[in-house]
Amino acid sequence: MKKVICSEKAPGAIGPYSQAIEANGMVFVSGQLPIDATTGEMPDTVEAQARQSLENMKHILEEAGLTMANVVKTTVFLQDMSLFAGMNGVYATYFEGAFPARSAVAVKALPKDALVEIECIAVR
Image 1 (cartoon, one colour):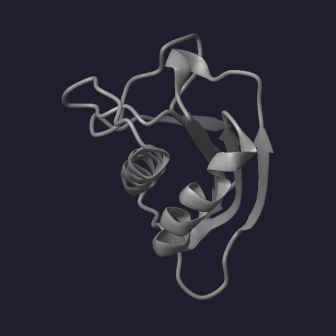
Image 2: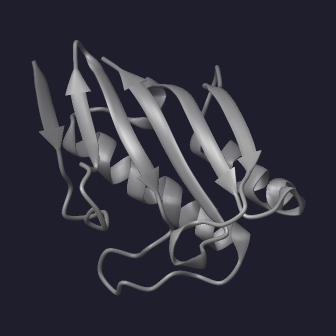
């Protein structure tokens, strides 16, 4: 059985998908673009975009009753690998202790011309 997780504090899905799905004690959070749910705006720098993407992810996890400490895997999509250091500096501040497993890849383009998008898997 699966359950849809949706937070009003994170931007709504811009396509036929859910913000997150919970199944068997695992929460799969869709890629979070750096869009502010209140304003609909996206910041300019990779650092600010990484922060917004992670905040969106955090809000969705909170809706599921979880925290960033429950995250076991993330995938970071970057517009260009030259943005890695800026993203990584912000990313490191969102986790304590054992960091989740992570993949980081450069892609040709991201929706809405974002510089970063981050998805995760969390467990209860």
